[in-house]
Image (cartoon, rainbow, N blue to C red; front, side, top):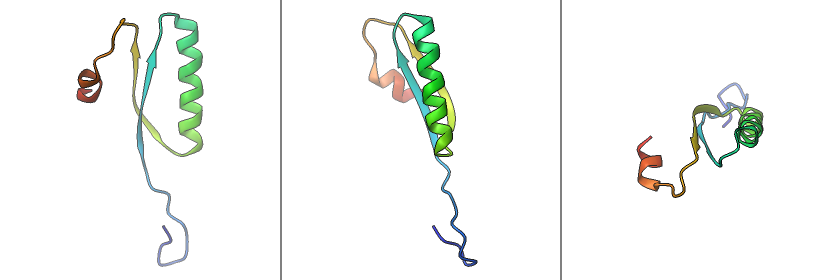
Length: 64
């Protein structure tokens, strides 16, 4: 959004990274890629959630 001086102000957004899997090395790489992606857009990563359970609970994710 342009300011009175004509400069564009970048909106700040928060992001949560949700990773699901059992292999730590794959999750580490996926988290790195997600953080890089968020960084390119100026998104602040609020939390990174790793889920290795057989079934995820959406309500638990939303609660976090």
